[in-house]
Figure 1 (tube, rainbow over the protein chains, first blue to last red):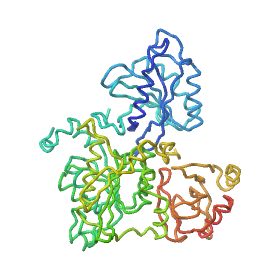
Figure 2 (figure 1 turned 90 degrees about the vertical axis):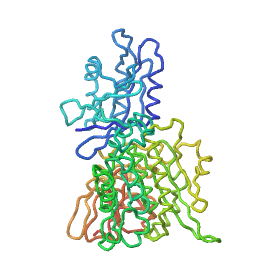
Figure 3 (figure 1 turned 135 degrees about the vertical axis):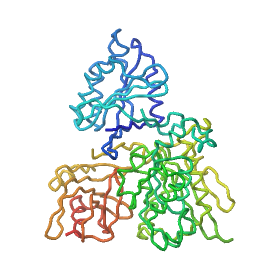
Figure 4 (figure 1 turned 45 degrees about the vertical axis):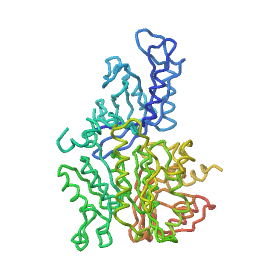
Length: 169
Length: 264
Length: 109
């Protein structure tokens, strides 16, 4: 299965702005992108970034071992949103560099603890994680019909007439 | 950069790659769509979805690029004629022919980096735009009209670039309930209106220019105008005066649209 | 006034009937609606628009055309999906949803 992640440049800009807001103690910010989903030809998948759900200041845990750590309230709010609005949820954070980011082992380990929980509220939808850099992004998808994680193959940023408007990962 | 693209290297070193990985659908392959198809093939786009349910007929020959009297005599499908045209320019082009109404094959269009609308009907445009907004696909629409006036005839047209979060064709006053109702009351009969090759060519060229602006970074200071109007008598184009009125508003029709497939 | 009680009553015909909006127009989604056509019954997904649509006072769309029933079938894209409808106008929007639906299904009998 090939997956395309499509997002407008306005939403991506908003995500970067929100992730740039300093936090009292967390080294970085995180959030969630609520997404629409659609099938593409040849059994491929389209993930459409729709809105950004920020994690409130109070929903971070002060743990110096992690750049950012959410509490259960943050995850519960995202779960509620997913349930109420029938949206797929992609957790997002940023690596502070340019170029294609890569998920760290901590990213993967921690995501695996909570992303599958979104199937408790929307079992038929894929969910996942996105990591952005200052000029690129990468993503992984948990799909209800696939046992293995699926890398997002293609990213399209709509309205961005820049060198990275559309690329294959 | 390959030899073929040397003269367009100013579009950026990624441009060839962007063109080759960006599927573009052209809905309507006659007066406007045939020009667009030809230009996209020359530019190096390698994945085109050609959509038209119709056959070539003699009245098309005055403006359909690539069509011949043989095609009209043999009632060739427009999709076949345009496939022939684009492959004569670049044999490597992957062509998907949709020789029916686009609504019947909407699934195939979700993949597109952009959809170029060259249709006659306001209802078609309305549904195309709604489809594109749902799947975050830039929609570039062209259309021309010939009106009788006191001094003879007036040629006019427009290129509308409908992007997510920006003004839609209803916001711009191009699609109105009155126009939609009138069209339906005429049983959707929109064919047979005057059409000629050179305004179609102008509109198609500008539409292609809008597409390239969306995909490649040749100038960081260009804004993509949502609506460009064409005065075919004075042979000028300009940003629609409506933009000055509506520019500060956000789209009233698709602002809260839910993206993706609601029937998933 | 909420349509929900009327949508609930439609669930006798389509158990998963629900309200769904597209570009500011409300539709009633009727999955697996049983449509009587002569001596047969077909099960199709349907979309009811209980207000003005495409020049009609109200309109019913089906996921596929019904052969030998209805006139002037046309194809539409609504909510990102293909829908078919036929020419049957002047079913008023001030009727109940059940009445609107029944009136539209009459030419398919």
